[in-house]
Structures are given as C-alpha cells and as structure tokens.
Length: 105
Image (cartoon, rainbow, N blue to C red; front, top):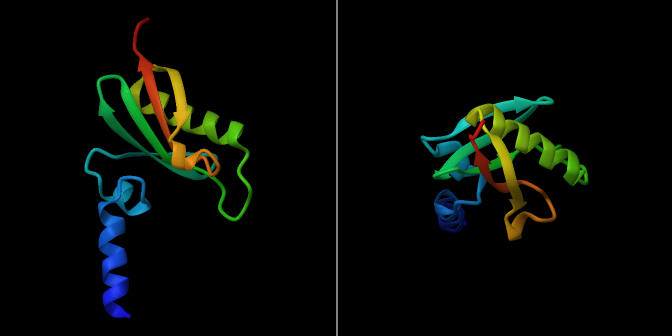
C-alpha cells in the first residue's frame, strides 16, 4: 500500500494540472480574491494560466469562477485579458484557465 501511495504522489507531482504542481512552481504568484487562493503562472509571451479559486464542495458558478480568475491574471500582469478558456479537462470544475493578455494601452 505504501508503494502505491508513493507512486500516486510522484505522478501528481509531475502532472501540470495537479494542485501539487501549482504549489511547487517557482514562477507562481498567488492572488486571493473573495477569500479564494488563485495561482497565476506565466506560460510564455502574453500567455498565462490561473489555477484554483473556486469554492470546494459546491457546484461552481463558472461565470463567477472565470471572472475571479481573469481578475487575478489582470492583477498580476497589469494587462487586460483578451481571451480566456478552460483547459478541456477542467471545463466542468473551472479550476484551470488559460488566458491571453494584451498590454496595449
């Protein structure tokens, strides 16, 4: 049983869409909105990811969740989110969002 638990733990540490990944990424910035913690990670030029921010144990209101994640990215980047969509594996729970920002004034 200990071997199985160790293997599962190692698998989760390596998965980008796992909570463990987001807590260990050195580029991660944390924003707290509505008492919800959201991890913001840069993906490349004008590309960002937001992970988290939803209420546990409840069916998420995806519009509220998306607005919270967009606001967190905009707070970290100082830019406007022009495109945001959930990763396919998170369309139901709204935990992982990819966004493109524009810093043009």
